[in-house]
Structures are given as C-alpha cells and as structure tokens.
Length: 322
Image: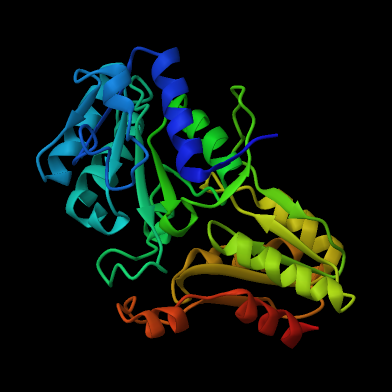
C-alpha cells in the first residue's frame, strides 16, 4: 500500500469531503492563496474556488462566529485556526456558543462544525505557538476533541468529524505532518474509540497524538528486555472510550499514561482517575504519569528538547513500576 504523510492525508480527506458534500466550505487566515500555516489546504482554492475556500481577517473571534452561525443554518464549515494557542482569542465562541447551543435549543439545531488546528512542541515555535491545550477543551461538555497520531487515522477521523453533527476540535500535532504511513486510496472513516496499536500482556501504556510514537518506541525497547507492553492510542478525548483502556489494564495489571501536555491538570489525570475507579482491583502497582513540566514551552532548542517528553521518559516510568 502507498505511504503518504499526515499532511497529504488531511488534504486528501478535505478533497473527499468537498467533492462529496457541497455544504462543506473552509475559512481561516491565509488558507486560500497561501494554503494555510499548516500547508494542508495548499491546492483547495484551485479545485473548489473562492466561494468555498475563503481567507479571513486576523480575527479568530469573527472566524468562529461566522462558522457557528453557518453551521446552525445547515452548512458544514471547516475552520482553520493556525495554532491552538490562538484559541484563547475565540474561547468564548467555542465554550459558550458552539459547545452549548444545541443543548440550549433542545436539540432543534445542529452544529456540524470542525475546527482544525495544530498543537504541540518540538519545532522551536516558542511559548505562544507550541502549547498542548486539549485538556481545557475536553473539560467543556458539548464539543468533541480529536487528536490523530498518524496519517491513516488523520484521514479517517477528519472525514468522520466533518460528517458529524457536533462541533469538533481536530488537533494536529505539528511534528507529525511529515510522518508517513500506509493510507488507502479509498474513502473510509475511523471511529472515535481508542485503538490498540500494539498488543502486550505485561503493562499498558496509554498515549495520544505524538506520544503514541514515543510509546511504541519504548515498547520496542521493552520487548528486547522480555517485557511485552500494550500501547493504547486515545484517538478521541471526547467522547472518551474508557472501555478499551480498562480492558487492557484488566489484562496487564499495570499502567503508564503519557502525553506531551504539562502533567499538572493534563488529560492524563482524567485517564488515570478512570483507571483507578474502574480497574482498581486489577491494579498491581500505582499508575504513573508522563508529561511535560509545569513551565511554558521554551524557545531554546536545548531547553525545548528537555521539556518535551520522549520514549526514555516512558521507559523510566515503566521500569519504576516493573
């Protein structure tokens, strides 16, 4: 099967969505002529024209307001926010409007709205362009939070999100855009459930987004030492599939939860709490969390490298349990 990058897979999903549904359109800063900061929209205007691919002023609040109104009227906007850090500018629109209007209207309106944005560190973008803020969003009832870890999942999850009738924040890690894997030509969707990326019997490593690769690297090293680690990819933080994680921990009896976000208040705390509540009688050791320290993301490459968690950090956590 062909191998394509996550950037190509996202672009392919957008083409499929635009070709299959005339109600799909995209708005954002510099997404038309330039193709977006994410460079995933590089050829959309050539294929679908200015009426469906629209540049906006530098006003995230206005972008989200337009998208929310359009989705309530039956269109399917795909918003591009250049960096998840900018979500603070339009947080009221997301938190108090997009997340709540379907509930407040008693289900009489739908909001088939997707917000594509990039998060994460590792490329030297500094403290205001490298954050992992998914826990803030997952805390708000009424919105979906999706975080693919590879090109295959990115294509299938984005198509699922665009066809969903609920507002969805689709977070793409900037360090994964060039990473390639096998992706089918045909149209497919991925469900929102967790995906077991590697089977094992000795310990469960729960991760999402860029940390899935690091978890798999750690699992390979552990296999050389005779330890079979099971790696569970949390592809969607909301809705959250606890059953797959609990089934894995019930089998292994031990768990490490890893994400790039700051450990303090990170979504890993939610995962660990769910494991403790639902699999306590199977746990043989306390759950370990792996994440970044509670400081802003450094700009210095040396400091940023020390800030971002990696396979070695996961290995240290696993070995401390074993």
